[in-house]
Amino acid sequence: MQISNEFRVAVPIEQAWTVLLDVERIAPCLPGAQLQEVEGDEYRG
Image (cartoon, rainbow, N blue to C red):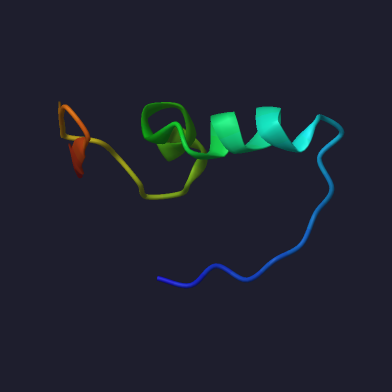
């Protein structure tokens, strides 16, 4: 999958990446995305 878009986030870059890399937190923000199973570092959905 390739997502192509630009926008500015008014937080420090470290804080933004912490949220963007949190799959359980960010999945509900993506239309059609859903997590069905989380096992350690593996996510299924």
